[in-house]
Image 1 (cartoon, rainbow, N blue to C red):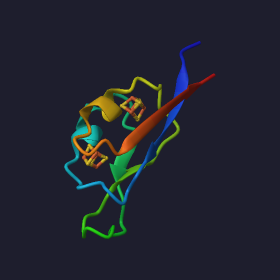
Image 2: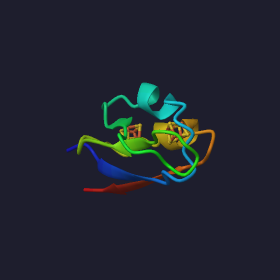
Image 3: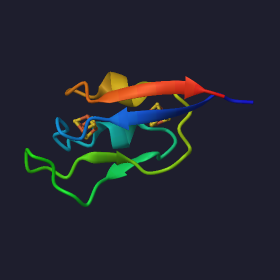
Image 4: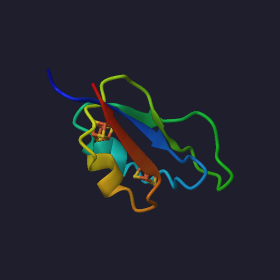
Length: 71
Ligand code: SF4
Ligand code: SF4
């Protein structure tokens, strides 16, 4: 069985560059409808398909993503 994971995005510091969305091989990240304090529509975790690969966290220039791995 492949590893499962989840991410937590600190939406308050996200600048909506969308790099995490492009890099995620599982399509697990989208753009929120809400505005954050910086005036951006931040990234949000939209699906339960995360494999915990960490690509999004490595890619994020704002270091806004934490990845958790589980079963
Ligand atoms: S850890 Fe990997 S699979 Fe999970 S949201 Fe980030 S890029 Fe996608
Ligand atoms: S890579 Fe980081 S700053 Fe860019 S959209 Fe994703 S969470 Fe936001």
